Length: 106
Image (cartoon, rainbow, N blue to C red):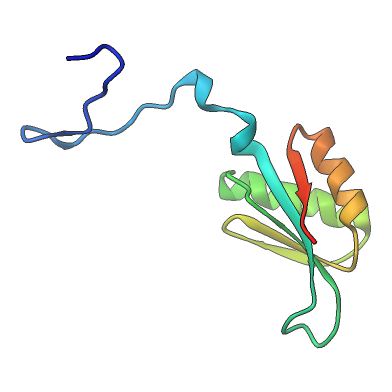
């Protein structure tokens, strides 16, 4: 067996859980996409940030901090934060300060 291979399934145990390796926390895991959205919002602009891989509690705290920073309302869901208004630059700067890589989509 190759030393770089890993066991995925065994008939004795079933599916083997993959353990988190310290080198897996790469920039790819922290890449956030920002875009403006008006669809199904009656013409109002909403800033949408997607791609978060955070536990629900951390995502809630980050959404609260971004809403406070922009002085606006908003919400969060599984891996998305939505803020009412056009705040691409403010959110990009705040996320970069929190060690996220940001890509603005047009």
